[in-house]
Length: 259
View 1 (cartoon, rainbow, N blue to C red):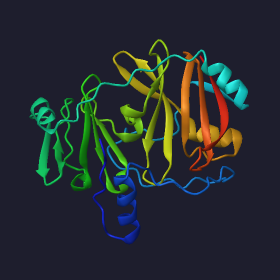
View 2: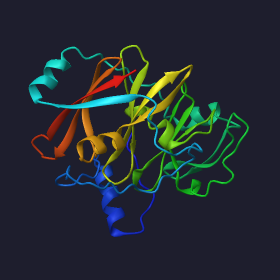
View 3: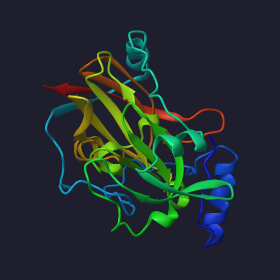
């Protein structure tokens, strides 16, 4: 499903829309991985009351070479995508009484959410900027898009928001389903990355990967690709260091979870 930006207040925003319509994320010519300060965008969406660092599981991060990365990839376990519904009509019917939608020309807006825990989104002031993208029924998560295509998501059961639940479409899950890597597209060409653990029927954030990676390596974790798990405690990924038409350049990393 192609996404669409709904802010057109500047020439930069207009350019961003054109790039997205071509099926591309806005990418810098080169990613400076030596930056010692990460400028985070405004966080949109409801968040849990505790927004402090989450480190309930210790991790080790090891830089590896390309040969080690692809040798490990032979043992990777395929991660199945999370089921999602993108049909406007079906979602409106299934979420009747929970989500009040505002159908507009070309997209489905969100006016109000009546969370299943008895709370509502009455105090949210940015809802007029949100457009429906998908509903993930097994996780009861509504994914929307804010200005500049930023990810905005809501757990309709718990009322937790974007930086707790991420974007289920971006997840890569470990073989047994105990852990998964999750992402949030932040609208500035970069992503927020974190690891979740399944507790009961819900995934909960246990590691803020960006923060730990940047502290351990002094490098900016902007965009990672090629990620996979070989077992429940071992995650591999390629950190994009430079974007090139003929193929991106990467640094490769191995992450070990220490239970």
